[in-house]
Length: 366
Ligand code: NAI
Ligand code: MG
Image 1 (cartoon, rainbow, N blue to C red):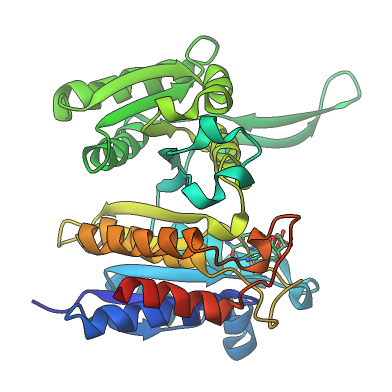
Image 2 (tube, rainbow, N blue to C red):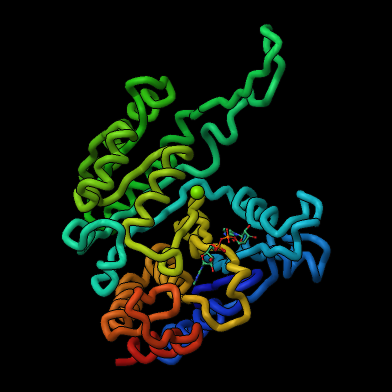
């Protein structure tokens, strides 16, 4: 069988720095008899500088052909004056759209060594491990009609439309149930069926997918406002949460902060199954290009390394290796290694980006 193939798009700012650490991890797996075919390409400002476009058709075609794409981050103040359609961020939006990545996966996981870093009490977040599946390509951010128009009273009216079809709800529900089967086997679906018709349809269709295709997975429904409260009150009650684009935007950001730093947060965006049965997939850290610390060796590479762990698990069927990598990260943190973003008020000497990568590889090898 061919090696799993990976397209790496480091992007801008700290993207190339954190991706260099991911390469060390990939190389280490290669030495252990798990080689990958790795290609590298340009996206964002790096692509704009080279080709005058933030995502070339050629790079996009490669992204469509590989088993998974791993992306760093795009953007930077030097592109502030660039035409909106050619801004680095436009490259990211285009690749997500062209690959039709409709399910955005955002884990919120508490690493024991960082439990005191949370804004919640240690006993509330200790052991936390939840996955939010957010619908990413439809809903109120895309629905028509939309716009700002004059109203009849001489003022203006702003309009956005929440719109979901049966197919859009069913496919993201399937992603959530698939995810649950690999984890704690529980899904909680969140909407506002009490006040929104699109929420009623959401609830009915998620229930339909459950009853017809995933009866083995435990399903519950919750109003999204209650979900927000429960996330802060007792987040460990959840395994997988599935919700729409708007609620998912808010709930995933809130859940992420239960466990602390932006430098720790991975994500995945999944699309329809490819010929090999695996979904189209793009993995990336939640953070941006961090121009304020770019080029200084201060960036925390863990968010991107954990994004690779997600790729191992969800694109390459390498769950054991994924767990091993997550354990290595946990071990390094438990040993007290910290990049600058993870330092508490007590201070100490932070590790550089590259030293953190080396420490994780060393822990993998132990
Ligand atoms: P940001 O996530 O780049 O940075 C926010 C803050 O967190 C900064 O102080 C930064 O130094 C810190 N930070 C982020 N990642 C870190 C890491 N790995 N280690 C240590 N510290 C880290 O968000 P910001 O400043 O709003 O945006 C900067 C640029 O990134 C903009 O051009 C924006 O458009 C772009 N961006 C790109 C994203 C992407 O590629 N997915 C997502 C968010 C922003
Ligand atoms: Mg957001």
